[in-house]
Structure formats: C-alpha cells, structure tokens
Amino acid sequence: MLYVILIAAIIIFWLVAVDRPVLKVKFEDGKIIREKGHFPPAFRHNVLDIAEHNPFTGELKVYQQRTGTKLSFSKNVPKKVQQRIRNVFPHQGFRSRGAKKSG
Image (cartoon, rainbow, N blue to C red):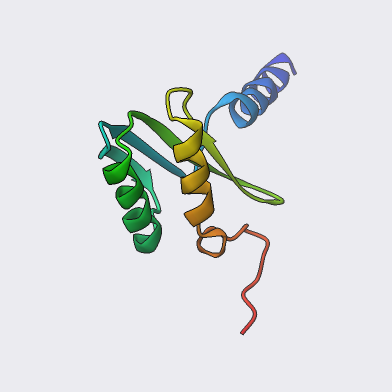
C-alpha cells in the first residue's frame, strides 16, 4: 500500500514541478541558438526580424494552458523586445488542446 502512495506522489510531483513548454527558443546576440517544439514559420520570421533590429540574449518559452497560451521570457530579455514579440505572437497557431477548429 505504501508503494502505491509513493508512486502517486512521484507522478503528482512530475506533473506539477517539471517544466514542460510547448516551444522553447534560446537566443544569443539576436540569433537562435536552440529551439525545441513547434515554431510556426511566420512567427519565426517575425521574431528573427525583431532580434535582428534589437539583438538580445535570453530565452522564450510558450506554455499551453486551459485558457490559451502563455509567453514566458528570461529576465535578460528587454521589456521592449518582449512586448514586440507578444505583438506578433500567433495565438491561432497555438490552439489549446480542447479547442476545435470551426470549418
């Protein structure tokens, strides 16, 4: 019985504590160093254009939530650049899992 409780605690810890973004992009001096996840081509083009004009070093993460998507930036990404990236973010390209396409 104790092992069942232990396994349940490990699973709950994994679901809550593990960082699981849908998209993770790392920048260094305005260039993409590493990307993991679905990076829509139009959004990628716009982010690279922003990074070319205002080079920065940092990380961008996109999380899928029930209410939609959430953008998260590392602390060394300037606020002005964060806002420009939020402005070009394609909310339709990152649909929540429960949302159905109307067609």
